[in-house]
Image (cartoon, rainbow, N blue to C red):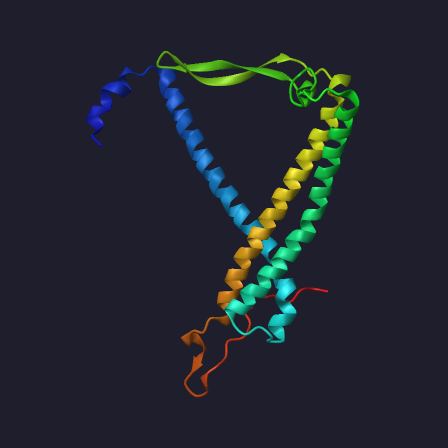
Length: 225
């Protein structure tokens, strides 16, 4: 990149434009740092969630009833499916309750066209109404915008159904998302353990005693009572 090609452009910028460029650069750095921290946090959380498969497979590994890594994976995947099924019941029941309330409500009043999100009959009536307006200009063009409140929350009895079913469905969706995340974390843990427990390496070879069978990985911590 030739800096001389950028000099006329940089010189033509006024002080406000230069401040905007610096602010955008700092925002970009902050976003990159936040994404890195978020990714690191999710990785640690999923590792912690994956330890549930350790508890499910502990006895079988210790008693050596599993022949090899394929056998371990096959049994571990079945255990993981069972855990997923058990953990999915609660969010499914919550979602079912919300759906039944929605169906019964509209079966009684007959208004199946009701919107659950607008400001007249929806949950939006509980929040401020915003309009996006330009905050600053860059090179004579609107660049950044900010939300300007143009309406206050106005709860209404016409939106009572949305006040009930939207939170219920939201809880069910978030809960099920966490359940699926735990399921994926356990799958990753299954592959990690199958390699660390049953993969033979020369690290286990001893000059005097020959090849020593690898013991279960230290990662497979015994669950606490």
